[in-house]
Image (cartoon, rainbow, N blue to C red; front, side, top):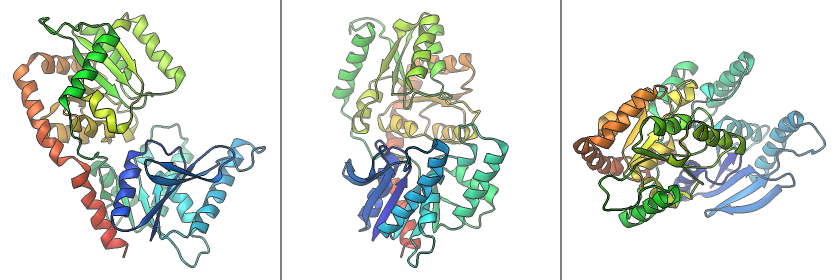
Length: 393
């Protein structure tokens, strides 16, 4: 059996896709990824972390305008996909699913379709007109009704999608939990010292008080609360912030300009993104992980991001936005605090409690060790395995 993943964007750090494909391999299937490539890629073979990838251009006719190429690439990708004769096609978000569905046109042997939605598509953080929103909602409903099953990243999104589309069957929920990470405290301490030295912060282990390190990790983009992390260091002199990740250069410059304007350049350390298999060293090196997404895009309000589980696997307590999925798990496991992410005073109050209430912080550290055993891929993948055994016979 050939299980094909269609991902019409760069396929490099797609950890969720890789875990999904590993399940298909575990069930005996051959796997292949069709993903975005360069302007001259027409099926170039690539290998990413042991997974075979075929790279396709998104501009099949270079002299045509970008808008026309987007339409042409749908048909080109669908034609290429059809020739692969996959048994199962999993679409990375709605674009990948649409290509998979088109590849089944006029085919006697139709591939079983799976919709893997990485976020709440209808409420995605992107500018859409009313007509575009209507089209996306109706397209999602149409395609979901042609899938053997659909996958959502948490219960809130699964419930909302079922309600909006009047689905008879609720999408299955497979959260974006990483594999259980083995943490070496010595490595975390080494990285912590590197942070302190790079930031020019106090490194004397005999000092009465070391800086309280907080971090943001992930893509550097708007609506992620990174500005709040920077402003936090201005109102709390005990805090130093490490921002780990890459992003658009122009946006990163605005973040550095903000730090300079409010005179906290010396309290902020920007660190490039690190490989997933080494991330625990960096997240585990700080005292607190901050997830302060804006609730304006509904996809963020309903989110349960990878970085949440990565912080748990790194044994780092959290302060997060008081959004439904985040608050549910924070409160259940008692591994941190939640607050209004747009209220800097509220954020600082939570950070200060984590910094100064040693007993509370110690309980969070103890509880996060228990959460780590529950919220890992080794347990989460069973949901996907059961769905495959039920629908893909």
